[in-house]
Length: 69
Image (cartoon, rainbow, N blue to C red):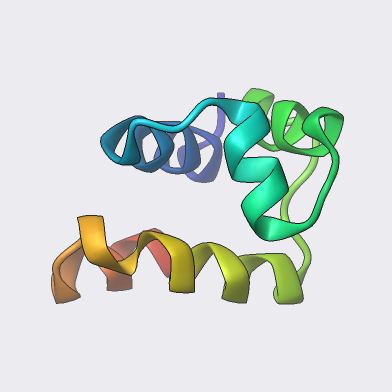
């Protein structure tokens, strides 16, 4: 699992969301979130922007910066 894949999964867990809930909130398919979390693909720049917006409340500034690296 890539670092980004682990970060997405960990942040989703902090929100208490299922993969399906995250997918719905971002506007992507469940399969897309599953591929991100398994490290098979990475989010597009637009999806990363949406992830940042959705997850910023569970991450402090430093964690958010690390998430985006």
